[in-house]
Image (tube, rainbow, N blue to C red; front, side, top):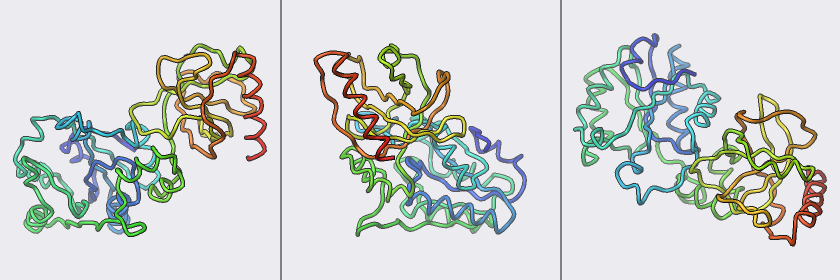
Length: 305
């Protein structure tokens, strides 16, 4: 997949272009309806599937005090998911207050001026431009004039309610990862880079990878059975999420111990999937007591896997 930062750069992509527009935090089943329509159109025409998104998220710029945590904290994580869906280009448009103040027509001029544009797909309620004056109806008017198909995907429902990033964040926050998985259409995971820590795990015989996560919504603190992918290899392990009360931590951390792994993980990208919840975080009398409990956690996790 190729990542670019302007619509103009798409002019050299070649082939009919099929665009999916949206923020797509989570790339959940509702988003998939929009993205899959563009991918299907590209396959039918022999063209190119493109996702156009915005960074930062609009609410982070327009009302930062109301901005929720994200489901996908990094563009790298989003790229991995979109590429697996068949998307070839990711256009990340910088979202600023100046961009938000543009009249809707400024954006449509740029959008429908793309050479080779064949299809634009959005969500049914998608709006854009100053005062959210741009609507699906406006896109369709421009599309008819320019000979571009404009499609609006209907919301995807589950248990009588629309699937949304808000619902998924709440499910993750509550520890209901089964519900989150159902709405995401994939198992919930976090993605980050392994950073240097205090190396306490190695000193007590259980080396861990400290993962630098962003501002994504995380499940409740505690110990989990996990699976992790490093360098294309999937491994089992145990993860601890929280403040490590026995040894103390300055901030919330995700530490992962991978079974039967030897090697240097520092600086490597890692994706972690949360499995069964083993226990909550506890403050032990000392490191030796913690070491005993970790041994029990590892044994229990191996049995479950």
